[in-house]
Image 1 (cartoon, rainbow, N blue to C red):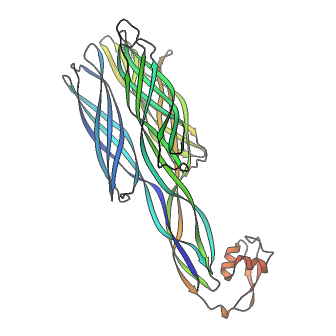
Image 2: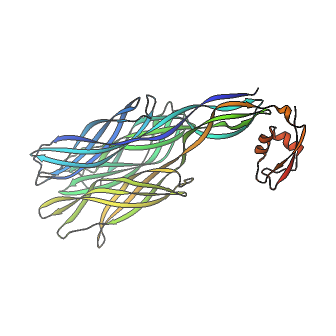
Length: 492
């Protein structure tokens, strides 16, 4: 009687959990009456979550940059608000590892005297690493086994690490009042060594301020390197890293009758680390005995494997309308959202919209207009295939409005792409032996084999090992190049 062995197989796949919209109502009070709202910038991030069977509750922070006019002067205010929401999915359990992406869909403002009430609509998308466990046939005694080596996603660890980047910078003009400080981060390189995550990249600070009665925006890039405690993240893991600025603060000492250009920026960000481990498992996909066959029960199992990743900088331009009597001052609350990311052979097509608020002056004072500038860029990605699913994030590292005979926005985009593919394979979860009486077979027989048959197929049909079959018939090829007669000695 043959003896087959089974082991337990557990692998992960990354699943779409859901997409919901959640509304926030935020009330902001300022010192003077609000004559006109010029711009509202909204940045949101999920900080934590609690998963249970069939549901996840998550908690986040929204940072608001509010620019307004009191009728004579342009002023600003910042505000932070918490939000919470939940999703349901039968895929979730207490051990689920989740990631969240948050996009601002819409924001509206109602004002009354010195109070602004903001209604913000957020769209939250969640993905989870879901574990699936099954028994699988791994080997057998007195059994001929055909084995495949399968790559599987074995483990995943997701951690959110707080990151602070501070730098002393110089403005191009004398700073009277800071209106808005915006920051963007583009990761260049990162490694995990001995429990330390080392990150290197470029930061860009867009500082909009008042200088001698004029509104000025400086775009100030600088390189940064930071080390974070990454205890618990295996150095052999494959790492996906994303940096999300949460808040940007400016510290400066303004002295009268002096030039004030030096300031310190502090960027508070979240570093989301997805550390995954890929393993190889030898899985039996077919088997037979010398005097038996098997009736197999099979089950399909899915795992998620990486395809490729990259980060690339792209420069692009867009023409802007300009009405007579209006003079462009600057653009504030600049950002980007991806609307489509399509995988192709060794490259990805990324489409989206760059948004900003354009400030301009008229005879009536400072006014504003919302910009939505579509972009479409192709990015080279090694190992990418059309069947992979790609995810892109875009950071606007530079945004400038220039008048070169026509108003034009010049943008530099930092495009990061991560891609993956779902691989489905079948495993044998049970095997029922079906014996036969080999004593009824002749001691020697000659069988006709057909072109295209493999050595495994021939040996299985004859219930002998591939080695014994080749020893008797050394001239056969694998697979057969033409029909052939096979000599068989049946051992009783």
